[in-house]
Amino acid sequence: MSSTVPGSDFSLPSLRILLYDSGLLRVLAAILSASALALPSLALAAGPVSLNYAIPSSTLNAGVGDMASANYKLSSSLGDAFFTGPSGSASYRLVRGLWGPAGALTLTTLTVSVSGSGTVVSDPVGIACPGDCVGTYPPGTGVVLTATTIGGSTFTGWLGGGCTGTSVTCNVTVSMARTVSATFAAPGTVASLDIDLSRAETKYDALTDGLLVIRYLFGLSGSALINGAVGPTATRTTPMQIGDYLTDIKPALDVDGNGQADALTDGLLIIRYLFGLRGNSLVAGAVDPLATRKTASEIESYIQSLMP
Ligand SMILES: [Ca+2]
Ligand SMILES: [Ca+2]
Image (tube, rainbow, N blue to C red):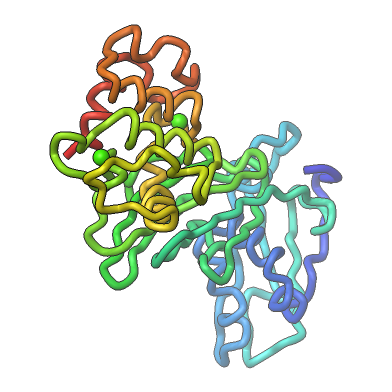
């Protein structure tokens, strides 16, 4: 956020440019909230339409110390607050307040990836993924991501950007470039540590299921993933079946809840638990200091929830 000049009168690009510059529209959307979403259609509609927006200084350039004005105002170049007919050539001016040319804004990027059948949209607008999976926002913007299943798919959770768990929404503060993934699996998918889908006596087994989890989290695939780690009663047996299942439930493997599924924390916790370790010997050296689940009892009850 450089190049802000107090108390000046800056031109914003014409409506036609705004319409074709979705990045700038998103900045306006973030600043003006829902009002800005109506800006292009309002301006093109016939009849008198108010185009004045009061923007509180707390919203615009939030956190910039030299802001003094109480309000910012966007007005039409047609001289007043009203349009009397369709127009594609009006320009807009932000009058009174702090603003730099659009190019001087340093925007931060939020990238979403979707696995499986589902969508993620953002508030403020900017992301509707798949299709439009990258949003740009003024630094520090709080963005709410919402996941929606398609055709009865199962939302198995978030990873990245501090997001974890299966809540339908995740709040991300875009203080730096962030990437968030949302995973959707087939209808009825249940996140379970019985990775090889075996009989009851080896249902949750360190040397098959546990090993498969930690190998997967180390990035192994194909025969390196499954060699010697599929039990005799397994019904999920091929590298593809096992790899796909682990991908479908990967968000659930974030045992310590730090927004990442990692071999040397989450994977280790799972295999230790399946070996019967509890308490300190379960968690020692295997929990991210920034994790949301840190204590042995929190970790134990979470892993137990993956053993339905
Ligand atoms: Ca098993
Ligand atoms: Ca983790």
